[in-house]
Image 1 (tube, helix red, strand yellow):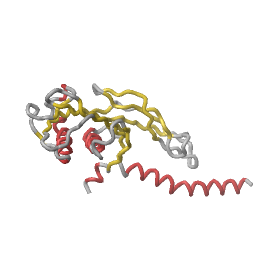
Image 2 (cartoon, rainbow, N blue to C red):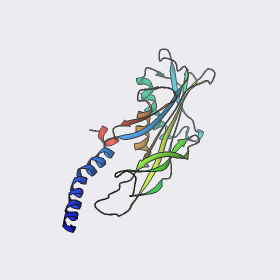
Image 3 (cartoon, rainbow, N blue to C red):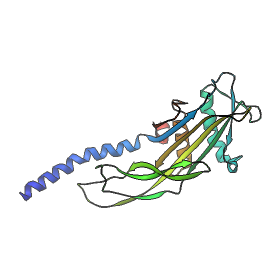
Image 4 (cartoon, rainbow, N blue to C red):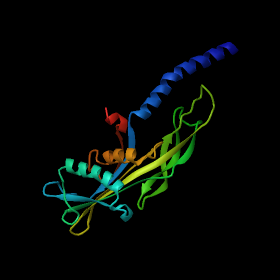
Length: 220
């Protein structure tokens, strides 16, 4: 009986290998972001101009902000809007971004045999992060061993608002948020911007999960 149990254990280990590889491969093929968008009478591009400005005054004029603002510029122009100076633009696009200090999570012993959930955070105004959103991560190996691994997870996000310049009326606001093992803004922000503008402006009041290709995949 003991030998049969051992043989069953070996078979289960072998069966788990393809599943483990598939799960790990899925993690490297895309960047997942939760995108929430709200709009009110966002005008069609014809005859409309825009300027991207820092929603956080501390970022205004910075080289880093300028680099990320160019990503938003490109997306707005793809939609048919035309860039102008903040003084003459009909639309002001207020942009902000950030990443938190990370939280250590221990992998193992989850309800799901491959991924375990925990409470992460979502990115809010004033470049702050607030707890409360459920994120899934963490490998649990029920067959190979019961070792624990610790990984640091960072919550990143961007905030995009579009105001009518003439009277300051808010026409659009959206957030794109993600949890990842990277805290590199040059990697995170481009992915979050792309997620924000996927199927833009989206359905008002709806939060969707959007997957975009990882940065290294886009270079090939």
